[in-house]
Length: 419
Image (cartoon, rainbow, N blue to C red; front, side, top):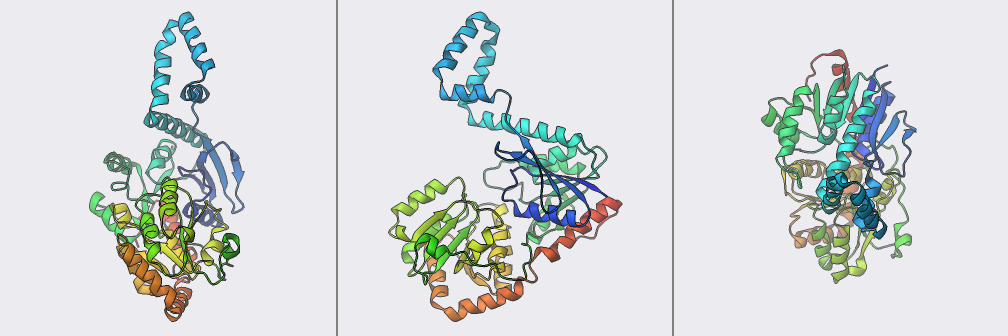
């Protein structure tokens, strides 16, 4: 039995792609250990029902308690610090460093991540694996440093060289580390073409499709939970509440939407900002927010929607080339979509005729598409029927064969014809 050490830089509570990959490998008789992060509330070691083991790594540095008291400027800590300085003067530079750390969010973040990387690498090196699987660039160093004689699979979920909030250093690091990688996977053909232009080799395409369900998920009674009339259309955005996803435009579009309630399901950095915009909107009584829900419950929320939004903005190549999993989750629940005019998203929406493409920078364009779909029951039902057929093709049960082919080739040490 081949042993796999897989790495992901989150707590593995809502990572659908990694869950699907671990499940597929476990079903194919690979022994999988998934290394992820611990927020202090989760089990350190856990056996997943799908047949793989989860090992959570704590990033907290040894002096975290001291740093916390410094950030709070505790009088007791300050008095103690003065006493220590009198008795042990050489601690002055140490306390100076601690002070600088509590002032700098960047330094605190760097130190926590450094401890996480070292501990994750050390934990993986204590075991022997045949294959190391790094999900995204932020776990590739751990996979390489802990690999020993193992092969390395690099599973890039994002375009590392052109993402919002990331500098050129990501691309430089990726180019260096790719020398130690045996096989790379990316999400779609647009990204595979881009990777080939940058590095001269074409990676395997592994689409981010959901698990196939023979039956449509049962819809949650959101109308009752939100106190809405049962005839009220629910206009759903599910996913991370982050910049560059067109979420402000959805709120700006609502005054021009004649019928429907906008519902955000998820959490993220700009949630407070969005809630403030919603409170200032003339349509504020038709805008709701629900916190992030567990993965196994999300399909019931999706199935309750009348329309789903995937309005990613073209702010970087990572967004431009995306084929987000929420698009396929809407499809799986037979929910027509209002979607961004980006190549991979347009290809699916227009080929399968399951939604309308809009200008995501125009609230008027979004509102017009919503109003058209809500007013035209026939059009909406036709899209649902086409989604019923499309969901049979865009699903993980078919797509996982590409993952297993990569593993078979890596295990055998043979080349693989890319798809």
